[in-house]
Length: 285
Image (cartoon, rainbow, N blue to C red; front, top):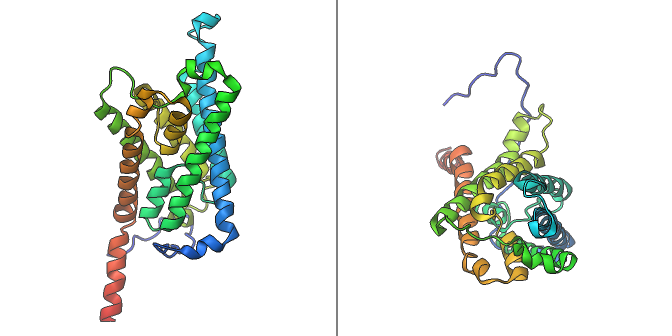
């Protein structure tokens, strides 16, 4: 199929090259300092992300607590919590994208692995670092708020009463799809080359994606879309309800991430068709 001619007055697109697929197993990474530097970056970034998110949630709950003279109409509200989560994601992705890719989320890491952007070794180590960072981040919140932490739910993800587990699972799938789809689109080298004249930072749409997803899903699940975030809060809060619903905040985000990865790579980018065309050209000359 012929390529569409450039529109009058359009900006010329820069050349772009997709990086080669990451090997499935790349044990050589274990001998590189850059690998461990990326792990440290993921650990610290996830720690800070959970600290800010859960601290905001606990602080808001304390501000509206009527037993402490709080005003139920006061505080930052769900809008403030959404800004806190989205803004912190924006800041952290901007800070560490050049070091580790700025995942801070096992679902995002899984999507990158399925798209062959990271190796299995890196994906597994990233997920471990993210979960440990999340646990430490929520632990700091509990240390600072002491008794108020457990009193206000510990920022743990649970399906809100009145919603079924199926609805909660669907909300997590769709919310994570929105996030991962945005991540792939914002970091697509083809988009960066084609729209190089548009000065938009990749972390900005990613942060906004988190913001809008929090607004949509917080009334249903408290917004997980990040298994490390849900695990960290569940470990420190350690209540039965949080553990009973924990599977939703792993299965849902992983399904949503896998669908987003497939959609972007094989539908929008047509990776399979390109690979098949290249294969045919090599055979038939």
